[in-house]
Image 1 (cartoon, rainbow over the protein chains, first blue to last red):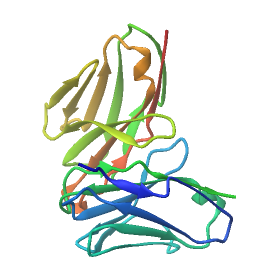
Image 2: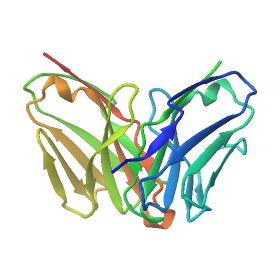
Image 3: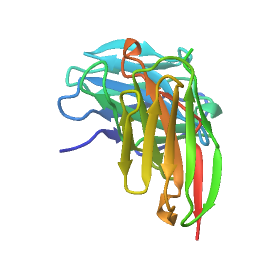
Image 4: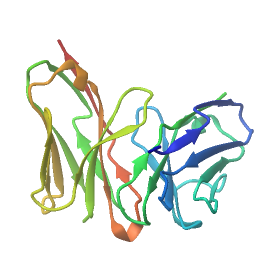
Length: 112
Length: 112
């Protein structure tokens, strides 16, 4: 069975640009969460979506937004990119709103 | 605010030696997780600990949980070079969904 998939694997953008990251959960999982991991730190929670509704938001500015589609896949959007947005973005899925999460391979975003 | 602290943050050890990584968390949590991360890679789940006194072992790694002390330990027995990686602990609370709060990570280097 396929695990969590993310695309693209790597991305290079310049300051001020916009980026969209994509995530497909494990089949049957209804919840998707997004995390940002800056080099040398632990992952930080950005959003959780369950049944297409936002159910949790971390301490990130409004430049960060996300949505979940009817097939439970998800997009993370970041506007007006800053150098500090350079990070590994991890997507995780779980069956329900609570429960163990399973992580995808991540998208490495570099902002120049 | 839930906080998770790990120590040590950096650990250099010789092959064949034993050592313990500690993970403290600030408020009552429902589950505690240990993950391994290789450079540039995503998170690999090692253990999920659910209840006080829980102990799990896989190969040279053993994790335990003391919910009263809000402490988990990851014990490494007879370390080998392949265990070199960064290890994270993380906790969640069902009132916050699947949202994980991570520690800073322990960068383990096992020297021959």
